[in-house]
Image 1 (cartoon, one colour):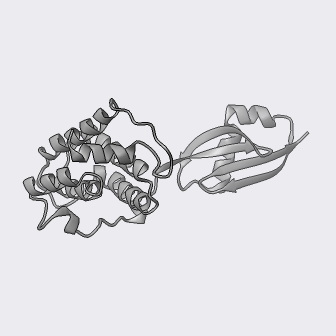
Image 2 (cartoon, rainbow, N blue to C red):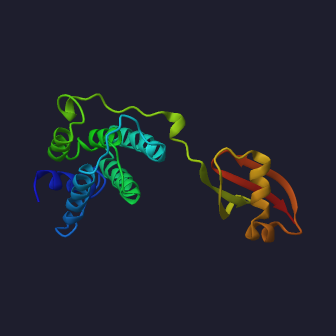
Image 3 (cartoon, rainbow, N blue to C red):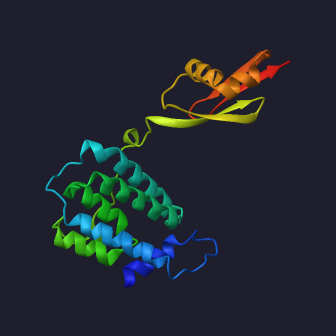
Length: 207
């Protein structure tokens, strides 16, 4: 399969600090991923700007890969790159600005393939490994929709998908309207309501 496939698989197979089970068949998944990267790279359109459709996911991936590499979480960094490739592949298009970022993020894990893509597609001067690491915009890494937990007396009873910037009153109202929560608190006295932004609603009842 080549050095890059083996290198990628070894880092992807599991947590760096944990034992992992070797699977010869699973190596094929790393090879398919690199093939997909190469094939999509050959279709890259000329553009020096990220497209609005891919901008948010690219910034999130830069942040994720950066943090994971610093924490030796290579397997989850690679997983996020695979997820990004799937999103782009579904859309069926990538431009050179996006490919450039993706190539730099993948380079620590698959240096030979990424250097070849960089050279063949003329993505920049010099080598990939000489490029400054991509930077992300924190404001573009935020999700529009998030999942929060709803608790009744400290016990998880439901999960809700809500707007990321939802306010306390709206979050609590949505939680109370959820069928399971409504049934749980029906006929009881609500003594306290807590909303932890982006995480949970906790409703305390008596009776």
